[in-house]
Image (cartoon, rainbow, N blue to C red):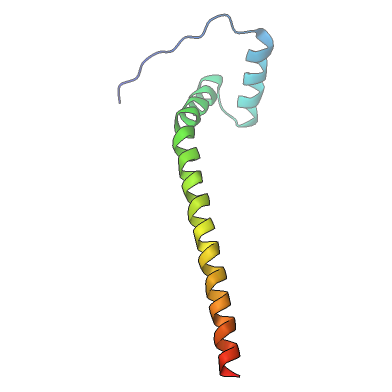
Length: 80
C-alpha cells in the first residue's frame, strides 16, 4: 500500500508529552499511536452512521416485540 507523509509543526510541548504518555500506556510509539488515532478518525463517520442504523432497527424490533406480546396476551385470554 502506498503511503504519504504527514508533518505537523509547532505542536505545544505539553500536547506532545501527553501524546507520548498516552502512547506509552498502550505500549506504542508516538508514531504508532498517532496512526491509530488517524485510522479511528477516518472511520468515525461510518461508525456513527452504522450506530444510527442499529438504533433504528432495535427501535423497530422493540415495537414488533411489544405487538407480539399484546397478541399473545389476547390469545391467552381467548383460550381461557
